[in-house]
Image (tube, rainbow, N blue to C red; front, side, top):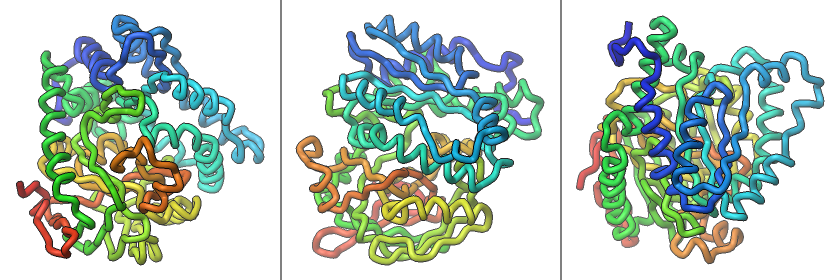
Length: 418
């Protein structure tokens, strides 16, 4: 039995309420009069209800929950017509995009079974994923550009808990996962709001240091890795609380330990091997090994899930190029927990990582005034996908390459040097 939590209650109601409060006040930074569009799996209703309470207390005009269900999802794969897998709810995403244009805040709760689709036909999964990515594009563009304030948090499901703690009885596994989520989300203490303010200040110091340096590239080395990541022209580092275009400061991810920016999608060269598995669409993709030339992945392998990796890379032209690079110290609390969450919201905050696909257009100087064409000209990538995978470890060294070609240490043995 795991020793992460000895509570007999699966989910501590006080900490769950604290997570809801942090989601509204820190994650969204919700302003009076805003609507909230809330997406969540059906099993997360206890958290949805507490979020509604805190949102309305903060002055929300309307909280609209949109629920998904694992059994309904599986029914599609088991009984749906063949043409079903080339369609998606574009009408829903268009409506949500309109809501975000009208200043609605977006909050997403995650926690679905990471292996939900592992037993389904990979071809159907790939088709449905591509169709959904295409329909989701209007939303992805608004999220990536931070047009409105948005955030993501997590709720522990039974199926997810048993994936993370397979040897524990069900209730113990749920309690342990809840404990891990609360700790990583910094709500395992009464002063959670103040703790987040301090944490955001630390991340802001790192962002300011990197932005002052104006590195033109990063050189990452470590076990089986030698990768040079050019940074986009006029790039800007972000981390912790970010200012959305509507003037509201929000924390897009709860938890977060990263500072991140936009690479130049045509200036990445070398090879890199993943340091943690990637759980994607019910498939575990492990020991990813890729080689870049002129920004594009020209060779890709994986010890497990290679077929799915190939389908991801073939999504579109931008899927083989980078849209994000993020720095996370090996000593981050999520890394030190020793857990593999099988969920990118957590696992990406355990290690430095890169993301295939769509860039964050906010990560540019004067981003609000740049057109998509200008962002592309400065090296920002465009794609239907945005998929993070981890490359950092205790062996990772990262140097910043200055405009004159000289180098300055950023990470040594997985830790900040300054």
